[in-house]
Image (cartoon, rainbow, N blue to C red):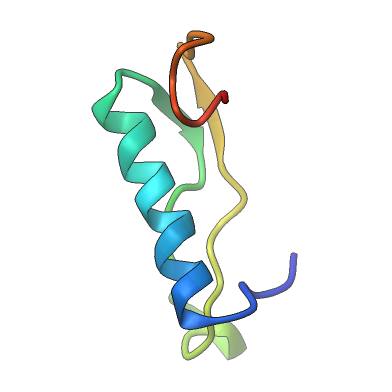
Length: 61
């Protein structure tokens, strides 16, 4: 996975992850900023898989 294209996109991705959790989804894996190795200073977000999603959730739409 490559980095998000900008700081703005990075913040948007993290906000969608937060929104998914607020709406009741659970994270099976990922969901955090990558904070290790060469990626620590970039806009990297771990690949994220949600569970317990419903069609009306923001992350589904």
